[in-house]
Length: 395
Image (tube, rainbow, N blue to C red):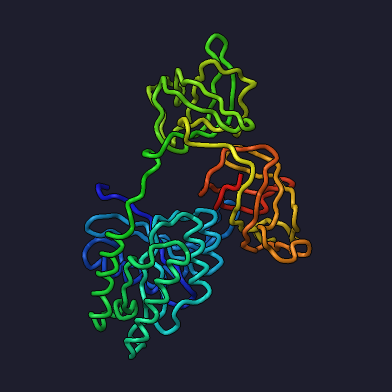
């Protein structure tokens, strides 16, 4: 595959035409030999999949433009979007937000934008759909203005974001090309140009979370784990983060992958790293080995949480302020306390119920290497009760 790969998705309020638009895109790109046409029904009946113990229906669609290859996600249900974004079942580099001209922005339009912002989506393209139902051009101008304001409110570039007006249904049925297929072409051009090509894992600074640690007599201490990102060459300085506030400095003198000594270890490899001058008891599972200066240990953070429903194997009852479960961050397993963010009303009587999507502050008993955009699981009594995403580091 020679073209750069980008992950995108359609988001927006129920019945505003996300799935129709997804179908219309595949139809148009199929006419150019760049996709297989997927009918509305095939996308709408998305198979259920389980990710991190959570049931999500997601349609995964593929197509290309002249310059890029896309993986495109469309979810049938509103709850599926929330679960999808928080669990990372589909990582989005960018999104197309669909808004019906007849309704303008609605609650889910706003909620999806907020979620997109929280999961680190930088840029969004707006598709104002169902324009065939509107006779008044001023009405369309109003919808566009409102959407630009809303984007700015959530920290997106409201003034510069491309806004395309069209009808996905016309495009799908080959009617009124000026608001149909021509607008699909315009949309794809905007997506190509506005949504940046993401930095892939190999290009990011090296990080490996420690799964195991052992000493080899006469050689020293070896830490093993799966490399999350970046490339590490032999004889490179690293930092080991996650032992209280102190950072342990070392040098990797040998790298083993698949029982062979190698010059380098890269994203996706399961590797053992031989650390110079480190005692076995200085390192424990859950710490991270990283490029110096790129990762810090923190104790508390703000997180977006999805609490598993009873059917998904979660709790049968809700929980209150100061809930104390175990937090699983990469390979670390830390006791933590969950509290409501400052300014929440009635914190003492407030309950979080199974199936809820909620923002909470997590405070770890021991500092751990964490960063914004990182996902985690919350467990209690041997089962996953929630899954979440770090949206802000507090201290």
